[in-house]
Image (tube, rainbow, N blue to C red; front, side):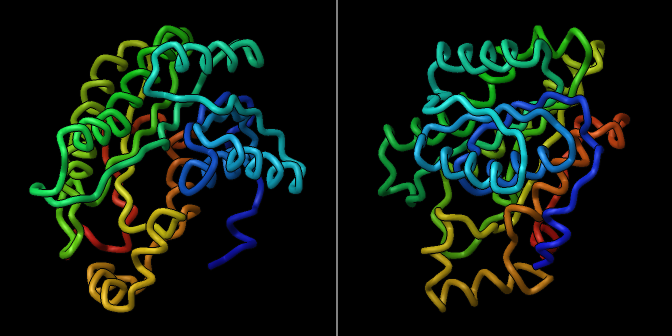
Length: 261
């Protein structure tokens, strides 16, 4: 991986205020740090306070400014409203939403309880809806970019991956985002999705540590490696920037070629 590239800096997002959820780890963390490197004022949140604190310390070590409200439970409407109000209190405007926070229970249908099904959809659908709804009045003032995360699992399946609830949640994100694009267009609000392939995070690393699973799933990635959070964050930077101001209602595969196989 090109560490120099990932930590490069610019003013591509200068002047933009970005709400980024799930900054404690994975894709959310990578987006928060990369947005700050490229000039955005980032206001993050996460349910895991200690993980978020580690992200803030990483930002400080690079000389980056990064604010956060944590712990913050995005399944609770009042908490979502508190996060949006916190960001407005700091910067008086909103320009970008990055809905990276998510969680899922991976079990086959016979083992998946109704409570686990609901918990997955709550974490993958309700959180996106609640954040978009809370931020909507402020995005309408100046337009903006909503970046949601679907998945390669919204299009296909991985053998030996019991992702029923996750597939449903991410398929829902795809459909929801197209509708958000339609409703937001008159106000200059763009809404797009990124569909990552398998990205190495704290959640996925233990699974792909199994040599058999790793070899099986690598066959579904044309480029011969799994993704890193920064691979996805680069696409998010583009979709947040003015470079993408004629792009909406679109989905972007950042998956090493997974969807084509």
